[in-house]
Image (cartoon, rainbow, N blue to C red; front, top):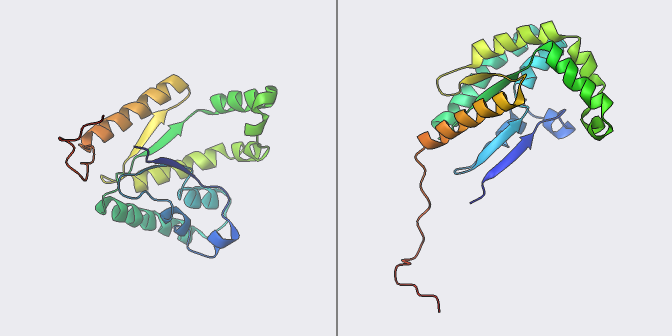
Length: 185
């Protein structure tokens, strides 16, 4: 059965900005039996706003508790939360950005704004360190994955996912009818 979807979080829309910062995230959380992969997430609302000074320090610091409470709610309601920090070093990032620039088939991946963000590497690393320390919990742990080598990143993420799924002890749903006497002619 299918039950996997990706939720992409980009710059908030006007409608999303009319609500609290977790509203758009909560709308994307999985239903029972569903897997949702977040491409970016509510952590942007701590990281980016901190690095760019978009909200006062008291606001982004308070968000650590909001996020922990939100994730605790999800976990208590049966959602398994796995968070991956896919870490690459600055040299690898430069190499990947350059590859996007050099290869016309990868131009769609290139964003000039990424270069401005790259200039804030040290600020982002400090912000990530704080996020990881303040929001890794028993019910929603962070997995820090060295990701310079894509094969290694993929192996680690796949291993964590397989172990987590096995731990759920899932079973196929039972049919609504007794099929033992059904004959197809």
